Image (cartoon, rainbow, N blue to C red; front, side, top):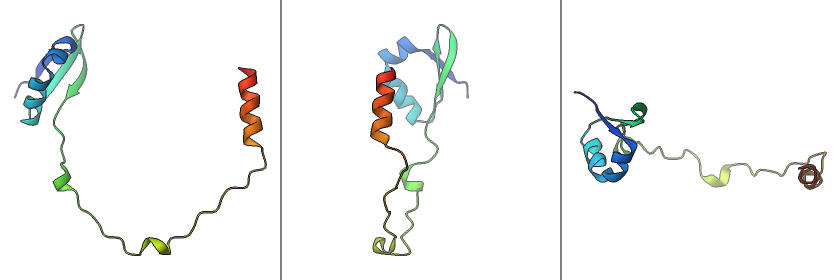
Amino acid sequence: MAMESVSVATLKSHLSRYLAAVKKGKEIIITSHRHPVARLSPLEKTTADLNIIPAKKPVSTLKKMKGLNLDVDLLADLLADRRRR
């Protein structure tokens, strides 16, 4: 199957047409000033392909995160940085 090439301006003008073609499995090369810059292709996996794995333990068994105790004053450092700029 030959890939279709389309300019950015044409793609913007007819986006829904090209998206419909991509949904059907077609790949489209997007060009800017006749140079290829991107490829528009269908997704390989859909949400139907994803498996939901149930949790082994309830959320309540997770450890609580404690705050960090830093040896520096972050607010003072941020204000000093702003003054330097």
